[in-house]
Image (cartoon, rainbow, N blue to C red; front, top):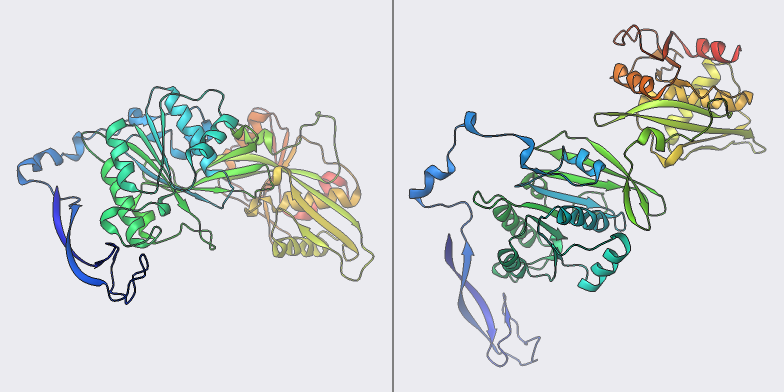
Length: 464
């Protein structure tokens, strides 16, 4: 439904230039005192207002509404499907954000191609790149470009809407929402709250159409605080919020869901950035562990299991301990916070009786993974011990435990599912806290060692 809005503007009598406020000199033709006040009519959509006679069309009993997964579009990118909860819901609005160069446009072009190959029509609207730039990227990362993808390189949301009405797509990608403008919201500039929310609301209206539902993916620019630029209302408006994380110089990229009305919030997927685009890492437990023979052991390496979303992942932690010839030895945690590393070193010195006052200590996770969980603490300490003694830990041994300031091992959540992942991958031993009562008594392949403190673990492995 549309309505007419009367709006006041100031128009130049010489060249017809319009601006919202009076000015002494026209910025277009440079004439002085040429502006006069004029009223203009603006057609606007009255979103959400329906005729009374159609009200029954929009009312349903909750018990009669279908919630089956058949309303999803499943892509061929497994990690993307996982994060989305099984695929893209056909009438959903998703927003994706990341730092510049993280791979937003690359991933979305791959998603567009996957969906287009399945026979769905896709409109990819970009306000940041020209059509030739998008084509160059497509030539680089796509094997064959589907005829079901249409490109709209324009900053006018009105033109994008006309293209949508003409093509009738199943998926709409807007890259990025802060670069588009609606004519009825002029003279507000692109990126302003008025324009951004206006454009986003138009996409919600189109995507949530009951007669013709469409999936919409918006790209949101990221500000210096690593949040979506603009009003927080933009995140409340959409169904799903995705964040791509990863440094430009690194291979690893992670896609995390911070909000999902159709799946699990907090789910995370992993990708490897390559010349051919983002490659889905379907088995992270293999990606984050160095491939070695079962009898090939290396000192300074220890394994643990973390949880990202609903999935347990095996990761390898490496340490290097060397002599320091300065009064202040280095403490470097490439994948670990410096405060956490210093705390763990203090625990090891005091509770493990290992002196590191004249040693440099460097910690790193294989694959560049950022370590956040406390469950990795025992593995970090054991990798340091292994490096100090220059004695390898068997590569079928894993550590899953937090370590307190007293040196006692602390239980971690979801331990049973972590050990099941180890059992599935064929590992033989796992060290956990003695009070980890939530684990099963037996597993098929792995033996569980429940010990009380750090000293017992060091004694059991190194006889020290």
